[in-house]
Structures are given as structure tokens and as C-alpha cells.
Image 1: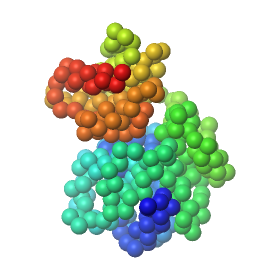
Image 2: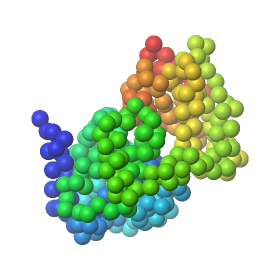
Image 3: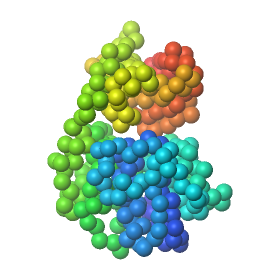
Image 4: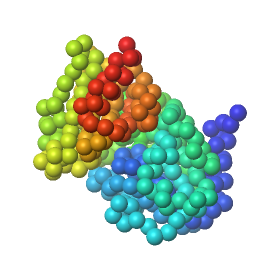
Length: 325
């Protein structure tokens, strides 16, 4: 059986046997995706490797303080002119999550896949997958410790950011003893925990408040009170002057209502596509629900993109959720 420790060693070999890398994460990157990207970039720089960091989607403004985050190319604005042989994918639950960056992989590219999603389909040439890790950043903490590099505040802050955001400020059920031990070690490297909590979890923009207000005005619940959902349209985004990063956390509001088992956020992409975010209070495996629609994620937090009209998708998703009782 291929153990986690063996996978880490295989990943180390992958980093040592190539010299030029493309580092990518999932579309519309969140805290763990951005922090994992720059963490890998930091490690490659220490090893004297050349690398390019690229993503499909903008880096959230509040993440720009991270080491070299400003050098992550948003390919929708500046697509690279070349293709890459050695690829490192971080926090991508399946290959489709790399989005349009796949067009910049050589046909015979080799891929190191580092991820913590239980729905990951091991698409890499080398796979480091730890489903019980709270964040990909937690895996990278173990990975970096295999190399003769000296930790500094920059990389410690990046790893801490991934842990902080994917555990909801160390409040979610994925906050294991190992997460807290790891966080403690990162604080010893100079991480400013209160500052990160303030800018990443507490501080909000005015558009964020406006779009939340709009979302809550659409709140609906099933008759038994077990499912609650909200909707945002492209017109709402324009009216509120909101960006995708302003939508983070919206799905938690319907989920947090007392008695609700599944909270859902329907974000209309266009007339024929909707992004569906699902959150569970604990009794429902929303990852399996998302997989039914070609998505994935975690037992308590998952998502998918569904083609069709909003009203049809709402009815279809509610029907699927109701099969869980």
C-alpha cells in the first residue's frame, strides 16, 4: 500500500528531478489555493528552480500581502506564450479544476498533484493526497520539512493562511490536534495570527456587505426547514459593484440557520449555467451530492457547476438533497 510518507518522498523526487515548473491551483482561487501556490513557489526558489505561477481567475485583494502573490499570473488577462512539461497542481480536487490553464500543459506533461479533497481522482503522475488534512497547506507543511530549507516568516505566513481560511479560523470540524500543533509551530516562525485573522476573516468591503444583503433578501427554505438557499445573479453583482471574492462566506448564512441541515448558494453565471455551493450542518455528505453534478469537495463543504436554467437547477438540486433524509 502506498503510504502518505511514501507519497511525500515521491513528491520530493519530482521536485528534484526537474528544473522548470508551472504551478497552478483551482479556478477562482481561495485562501488555501493562493497560499499553497506561493508556498510551492517559495520552496522552488529555495531549491534554485525556475517556475511560473498561474491561475484562471484573480487573486483576492486581501491575499496580495502573501509572498510573491502579485506574480501569480491571471491567465484570463495575460495568458503565457509557452507550454510546460513539469506541472505542480495544488488544491485541485480533480483535473477539471485547473480550468483553462490546462492548455499550457505539454501533451506529455508530468504532474505532481498535492491536495486534501476526498473526491480527488489521483490525476497526477505523482499524487500526494491526504483527505483528512484540513487544507493543502497542512500537507505542504509536512512536504517542506523534507527539504534542507530554513523556514522564515514569509513561508510560515503562507502556510498559516491556508490553515486559517480552510478551518474557518480554527472553528470547523477539520480543526484537528495536528492543525493546532502545526499552527503553533508556524507562530514560532513569527506569524502574526491576530493580524491575519483581522484581514482574512473579519474585515469586509462595502460591496461585500451589499451583496450579502442582496443574497439574504432571496432567502428561501423548504417547508420542513431542513434546506435553505440564496441566489445571486450577474445583475446583482453589477448593482453591488461586487467581485467574486466578495461572495466568500455567503453560503454559510443559510446553513447556519437553526434546524437547517443543508445550506445552498446558487450563483447564476449566465442564462445557461449556475455555480452551486453546498454546506452541510453534519448529517449530509454534500461532496457526494456535488459529484452527482460533476463537482466535488468535502463532506461538509462542496460545489459544482450545473448547466441549465436557474429554476430548473434549483428544483433538481433540492430534489437530490431531499433523497438524503
